[in-house]
Amino acid sequence: MVLASDPEMRHLQWGVYYLRSWFPHVENNLTVVTEFFLKGFQIHKTLRIFLFCLLLVVYCGTICGNLLIIVLVSTSRNLHTPMYFFISQLSVSDLLVVTDVVPNLLHILLNNGGVVISIACISQLYFFCASEGFECFLLAVMSYDRYVAICNPLHYSTIMTSRHCMILSILCWLLAFSIILIYIIKTANVIFCGANIIDHLFCDIVPLLELACSDTFVIHLEIYVIGIPVVIIPTTIIVSSYTNIVLAVLRIPTTTGRQKAFSTCSSHLIVVSIFYWSMFSVYIVPTKGQSSTISKILSLLYTVFTPLMNPIIYSLRNKDIKKAVQETIHKLDLVN
Image 1: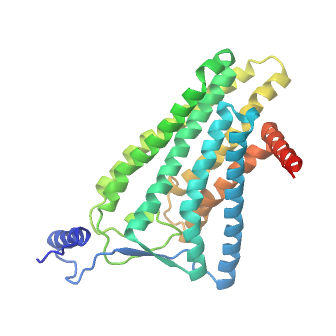
Image 2: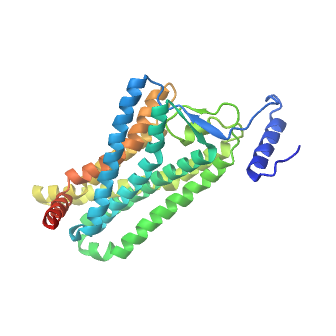
Image 3: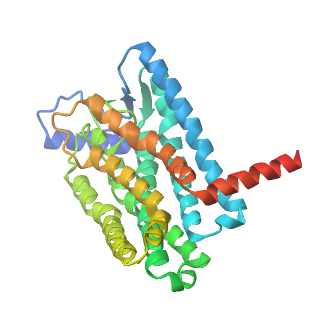
């Protein structure tokens, strides 16, 4: 076998060689896939244009809403607290998710599908999974923040200091991007051959591995193992934090006091519920018998509409953010 000079092509040639060695029934003209075709929604052109316009509006709204949260938290002194710092970090994560998925999705809708090279597909998968992993960690940190604020209010300012919050945020980012990298590297070394059509909206792990010719048992095992620190542990922290919060709130003698205490974490509870419901509906609920269209719609809710809902929930249900918006508008009026 004559090997190519390019390292990537040499890797692909060895992949084909081993595939033919282990699977002699595979045709001799086996070709290794270096690009994929994302099908998107195979629907009428009018519906695709409508969906394109809808997603474009949602994308612009998501960008503006999350940027507004980041700017307000950075500039308004009233929002220089741990809770709003973490909300701004959530907005950064949402911006990363929609920017990773939506622009290419809009291109796919306009062209009734789109080609993406393998390295771009793996990169999209990495940033998407890392951003969602960060959100899992961050929601757990935010629940801990609410737990300290309600259950240990006298020591809140000494526990949740600016330095402590910054360290927690950096740890969430580092953990997410390093842990996800473990199975992304393994996925990047998988040999894809034969069909290169991904019946999905973006490069997600499940539809991508369905096209693999080499053994993916180790990758699936890694995904399940990684699910423990990325999903199970944060979920446990969230459940235990809110269990203690509910018990502490119930001990408050007055109804007004209970409502005031619980209102500080109601927005976070809504965000957690939407995030985990959408995530579990896509990856945990069995997809056997589920049409590809339903799976795509659920993924759309998970990747596009949830990042739009987060700033809306925190803005509509938060007097401090409303006040900061009014002050900013007033300052702009004075300048003009």
